[in-house]
Length: 258
Image 1 (tube, helix red, strand yellow):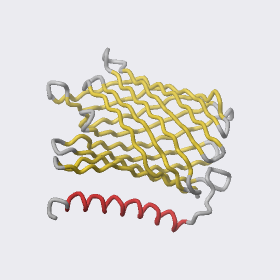
Image 2 (tube, one colour):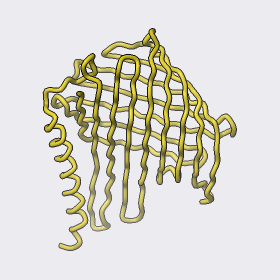
Image 3 (cartoon, rainbow, N blue to C red):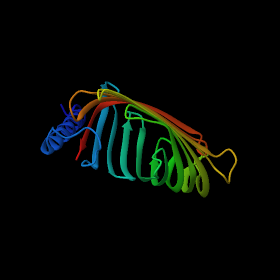
């Protein structure tokens, strides 16, 4: 009985989190609009997923949680996001990755062209990043900008301060400027199915061979007004640490517009 307690406690904790998300959004009601409008300016996005596998060798688990908030008013959009991935096996810790970001878009009269800015902090056990702070500005253009489809590209410059663990396990603290190229794609079918993908390529302007690649894609299927089933794939590569990760997750996503 004692040996089963950790797995039981963690499983119950995960179930409670799901119930908390459902109850939280029920408090706000289920008749909210599923998109921004002239009278709807805020959006809260909650997602939570995880896997548990207990064998005679021990418990293996991975938890993936995120909270996002968006504010949209006329030509200004602000987004805030926080995510935490934690994973463990009987042999070792595999993930303890935290990311927090704040970004904004400032649109011009020609809405397909806009300016962007961001501040981002990352700490990743899996990528051997002790701490990474990025901030920068740039411009973007949407080649297709319809309600059901969007294709866009953006470019800009980032200032970065990082502390990473290299292959020889030595800690390296450094600063650099990066070019940040981003490609975006989104497709939506009748408010029922949504597919989106984003890719970043961020080479250093100071050090050759220093680059960061980030790519993710997600597919969401709406099962209620504010609740969707989502599966996603995320890939990250950091040349400084010679580390790369691929994470495939699935779970429930709750969104509330108000």
